Image 1 (tube, rainbow over the protein chains, first blue to last red):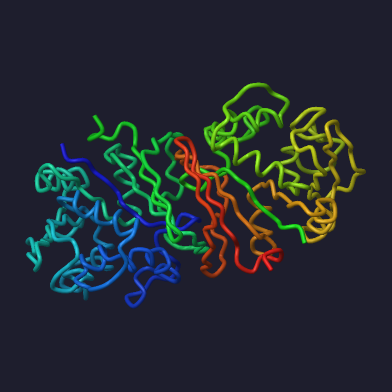
Image 2: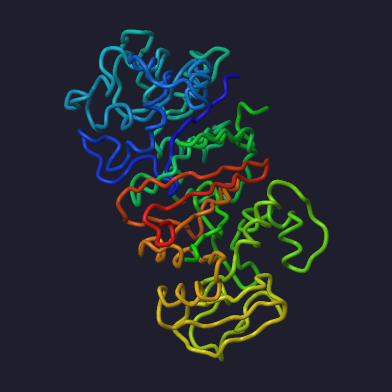
Length: 220
Length: 220
């Protein structure tokens, strides 16, 4: 069964975005600092249709994840930044233009149903209104023998983690303090749990920690 | 000038102690999981008057810090778990018995003045009532050409960090989710700041990240 993997950049103080996000600054104040290592990587740039960038340990980590991913699950807020009916959402086709950087089927959790939207470059956006388990089931079917990537945002990651559905967490820890913002784990309220550190790769700009979550449905 | 260094174990969700701390469980529920790597290390055990333990990358990191430390600063709550007048504090001489594991002068931040208490094995406890800068100044004088270690708790670390007095943060990141507890950084409310990742050492049980804080007084 396809494993569910959350690959996410966080600050030392645990934020996935800075304070005061806006349409102009969707990652909030300072939030770009979490992703500078990715913006500089050749593999990230290639997936976004950009040239150049560095080939290094960081770009290898991204390339590895891109290759392993057969489908993506994300929350509505991460998809468009909006809420409510699609007709009034200025980014109803997402943040990423005509050729989004996913290149696989993406399943968007929403309360507002809508037909699947096929984009260029292999990305399609399907809209799932019957919950996180249904979205995961559809993504697993689409991913076949590859992984399902849980793209975020934080509240969606927390929901999958608390439901015991997450198999692996790959944290990209940026040496940055944001001071405030959207907390990845916040206060989950779960009992203490030890994860298994499967791999740590450190570069000057980020530390990649791959962690297996015990009891994850695909970790059998 | 002696540098101020905070060497501290945290969970993936950013806690230095779990929820519901008590005199019996000062680190709260699950809090011991943050320190298992240290409890198992020969250097930690030796500093606590215990035999055995493992000699490995983790014990080397602890030994390095112990050797570099000439004085310690800590908060009253970390020192005794109590508050208010010393006469009514059941742990008025600290948690650690007659021979505490510090073996250097320790400066305790408190609102309640008291004479310095000399313990066995080179540890003394001095009680500083005139604030974090005064405590640091006294600790620097005592440390001479060594570092001053900021032992905690979280609110004291936050105070030094916000005051721009911290030179280095060495985070020991345990692959554990505590779900709730005492957050090291919480929402500091500072502007985004990038630290310099000076060194990362990963073992199966913990990842040690050494981070330089720009503008720290001793980082000149």
